[in-house]
Image (cartoon, rainbow, N blue to C red):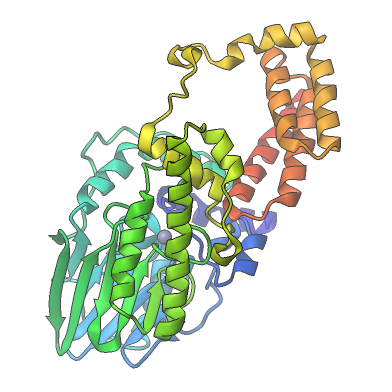
Length: 437
Ligand SMILES: [Zn+2]
């Protein structure tokens, strides 16, 4: 993995601009649980041909897929993957049909779906997006500096130099046609319906082709519990939006389901089974959080208490339940935890040095942290080392205990995003140890 990373550095540098989505590409749960996010980005790189879904629909496989729908008057592209995939995807899909590109439809404005627009756009190509596309693009551009740092960390990339702030409304809007709830058009003899289906993002849409009973559902469905809160930071992704949008897709009774990450699902019975379970899992977690909030429970308690019943266990290889629980809680009511000290600017860490002094110094706290590692309580060990390092930032025993705790967590980790952040933390902790020598 490390050698791969070094060899492909220029490629990976590109990604810091792109990976706004945090969504999985792997075709199977098994594959995703083994991988960290950087590995997921390689999905489909070795494929020599596009996947033929039926006589008119083709899929170029990647971390994020590109779809082409062929008609007798030109073609429609649905999602465009990332810039580093675009040329390869275009080559694979053009090999199937080289007709003009009349429309590009963007299921949402994350960079792993919009990244290849420039590669596909021809003179006269219409680019269709949902109305919220404009604000969502502006939101991402507004915080581009923040996200560049977070993405660099999660994908083990060098942190890019900060660029000038583009302002609140500085995004380059590529869409040429925006719709609110529903948009229909015909190309040749093929009818397309484009439906607003918020979930992963507020501008998320689903493409429906009645003739083939094919639904292109973007990132509202993949093979893990959804990333309702993603660690790189996100505005709230509303659980009830996912539920309503999944209901909208279920009502279409699709025979082909085409997610933008992963593989197609065929047959209405199987699609209904998978989408229903997915919807019910999201609704279950949402309702348990709301029930707990109304009962006066705090967010930490709910993060520990809420688990999916086995019938709804869709896996947590990408989105994680505990993060989603906190995302739902704080999405609804924000950060205040009823503790009066939280109203003020002094963080809890302002008194850590005093506590460390009373405990007999940073070494003593580091020793306790090591005992917690030995007792398989790595998160408690991390808290303790944070306290020790607040008093003595270069304390070697504390840094070593921290490294051990992080490595233990990584060994036990079954979630690719979590693994990305643990790898990042392990690297920075090792660097600190090397600095110390
Ligand atoms: Zn995506």
